[in-house]
Image (cartoon, rainbow, N blue to C red):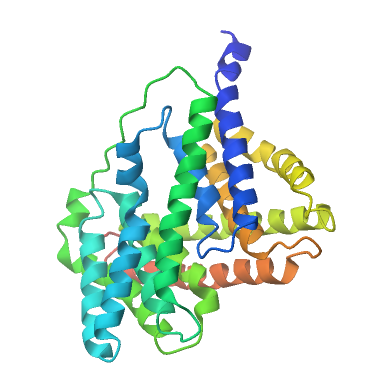
Length: 336
């Protein structure tokens, strides 16, 4: 009956999210670490996923990228001179990830991201991948620390909610379906081993993450939705770069401007009319973070790089939509 009371309940959550994204991006801008965009993303995920910080939950949820990045580096060092064996091992990793994704979808998505990142970038001589793995571990810790501090400083008085269970047993048992999904992602990974297209890595990572949903119709819908989310996210990041142009070297002004800019998105993320609407706005927040972290400089806009990122993601996801529609047509509109 009291709308104001209901809204007041979200005030600490909104503040947590604002501070997590703002301080996470600030820290990423003043550190020179690989995967530095993960600092605000992890901090944001921690404050939206926990009411009170739990170290056990943190390790369970957020160390997949680091662990599989190390696995990717290990296999690269072992099979660097034997692409055939490396390809077989990689397909096995992807197949295993998709096969067990019904148990931990978010963790498996991070696993594919971490493994692909190091295994692909290790093929380039200008990168010291060992240092990149260390950086991934560091940014995970930094993101967790920011989230933990914010959760401590802005309590809600609520206990942690139990994790949601994802059930995908029927898809999980369909070996043929898992094989097709694994083959699509593996084929993209394989193309990166031959062509100098690493600048499009995050388009590939977006597609690989969507495919952990396994169901073709859901993948098809999410492909279109992610085109919209990333296009809006990059567009908003471009607008922010124009607004902050020339003054973003001042961390106080930058932080204040960032909080004002992302507040409406986070507000809608908590007060959306449906779960899907809330997820949509939180998705846009995450889509804004990467171009701001990677491309924004104190005295320049990010039009070219952010637009290119949006275009790359759009192209690869349109390809995904045609592919999933083709498979659904062959299967008679089902996943079986």
